[in-house]
Length: 260
Image 1 (tube, rainbow, N blue to C red):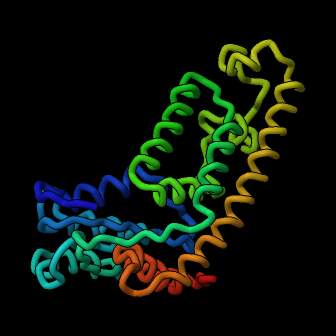
Image 2: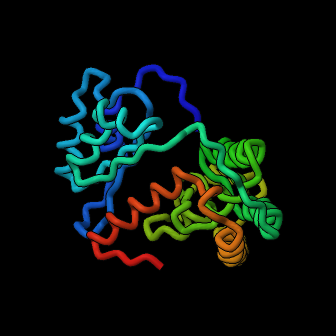
């Protein structure tokens, strides 16, 4: 993460996230915002206090991360931005280099990610472009650093990674989805002209294959995390990651969540 100064409209960012993101309505849901920057928290036409008030009304906790000196973050009101919703204020050294630990499982996870991509079946007007975007983001992650590619693969193996708007496997798992309502030209070429039974069988095969790969990635990631924890010490831990995890654990405990 790098910062170069400039305008940072924190109030507007918080307000936009409240309006545009889908927040759960269950009172037991843990709803959090993390906002980071190195400019005064007060910038922008929208007063951050108004945005914070709106967040609090929706039971959303705002956590602030100032990239710089702890006291400077307090002076520029980053701490107030967090305290008003019961959130955490953190200050980190954003120039500190994080030492990434390579594990024996990284390459295997990356290979499995390539196999995972082959289980996606694009459909609809956006299907092909979304699938291409998925591949591009994988390449971007790999170009940045191997560990980023590994973390992306792990994220994609989670049930939270869902693409039902363009992927037939995820769509088929949705109770509201009707395969029979799709037009032939909305299907990928290799499925056009096939019967609904044939398409359904193909989707189920890809679904089974995906679940198997996701399970393999999840199991390998457990071994990967254990390997990292054994090799890691305080000098090479990611400062931002550690700060965020501590905040999540504390706030989750208020909602009676347990951490394994």
